[in-house]
Length: 217
Ligand SMILES: C[S@@+](CC[C@H](N)C(=O)[O-])C[C@H]1O[C@@H](n2cnc3c(N)ncnc32)[C@H](O)[C@@H]1O
Image (cartoon, rainbow, N blue to C red; front, side, top):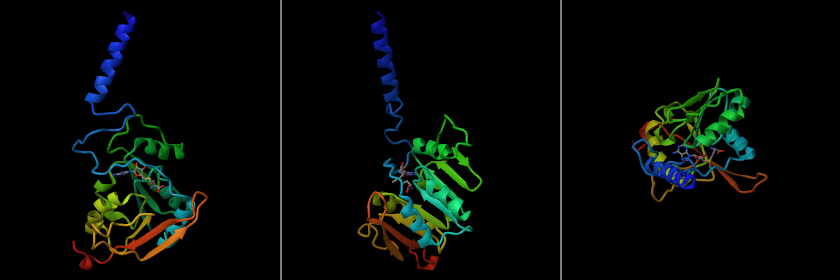
């Protein structure tokens, strides 16, 4: 009897999980109106050597506001804040990564109910749980960093073209726009190859946002 009741409750939980569109691991399935158009959860943190190269190429300084699109544990913004005193905003879809960003500075309280719109504000660095393709204040950035696949970059380019200030530096780890689908996308102003302890061929690509009149939008 007990066994049967147990089986029934397990079945009921599984049914509820499917009905709510969640997997047991907590990842959302299906498309709601607030779901990001792109949400690949692959998390590979950028190696420190690559981050330093990005800072060097962009000449990051204390007046900069760095946006990390798909920030993971938001290490890049924390490092820049510590090294240069620059401000940073990291945005990330995966709540596990947001927790890691919070854990990194254990003075910040853990929050069990992380939902879209939750933001953790530090004196210089903010870590947001949300969609990098839906940032209303992306135009505040002076430096944008990302380690995202070309599919994301293709979706993000029109946003960059519309909202970024001229002179904003964009730095990407390994990936470029797909020039076949985006023939008018900006061309890099600098590229570098960096060696880390994991591999010796990281690419860093930098673009500088051109004046508005030379843009198609
Ligand atoms: C390869 S990791 C890069 C992490 C960090 N920027 C770095 O370079 O160390 C890419 C991250 O982007 C996040 N991501 C994917 N799609 C996203 C989206 N639409 N908005 C925000 N974050 C996203 C993933 O969850 C993942 O943590």
